[in-house]
Length: 172
Image (cartoon, rainbow, N blue to C red; front, side, top):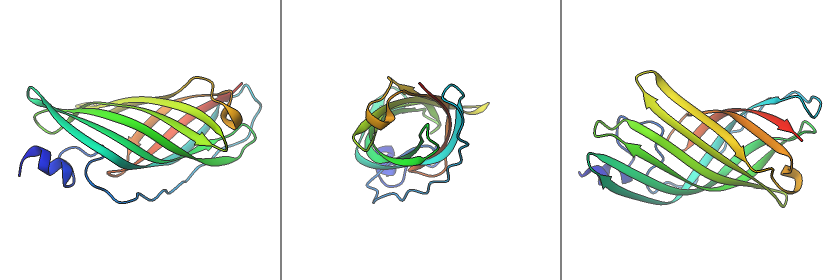
């Protein structure tokens, strides 16, 4: 089976953080913990993100493969009042996969929507000999009930379509 065929049927074997193939709906398991504090104090929010691919494309770039995926999903967001809400996601990710099947670069942009408001997220990661390195951050100041939220943190894959994240949010 070709590399593209393997990617569309469950992914290349040596890369875990990939979201590939014609997947059914992914289930969301949210395990969030927060401690309400004042507006200027960062709040650490640990949770789970679940994605469902809507389209997948592969292209060769020399000895590497570039995989582009559009997706929908769900993400828990901690609000300033101490509540945790489940936002719906729409986004895209791109990953560059080396000839050895290891993820060289992973990048995503997504928009979270909750109760008429939106908040953008952007993240990058790589898998090196030092292990999984990642960063996620909010983009812009959000709108509606997500207005004034700023966050930075990390994320890690837990399965083909799920990730955990730990984000420190500041509310302005």
